Length: 75
Image (tube, rainbow, N blue to C red; front, side, top):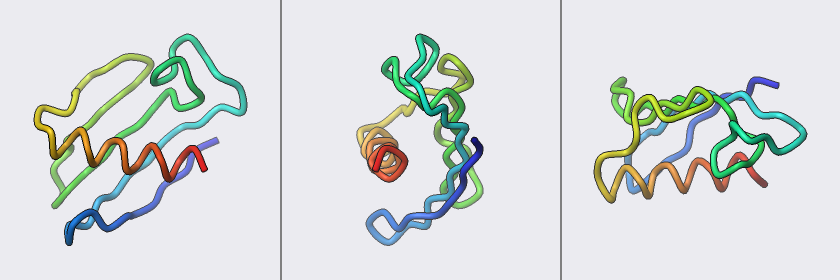
């Protein structure tokens, strides 16, 4: 199922779109249920995952944004 949304991360608007499976998968992020994910900040793609990393977060801040989005998606 596709899902999208926006979160606020330290004053930044973070947009995401993800494809989430009801069951964990070997191609999911950390072997989980999310197997497609794009994250944008200020219209710049900072994370892209499509059954494997296409664009891995390059900074600690981007990794923290990824973790914040993953928390929203796994609730």
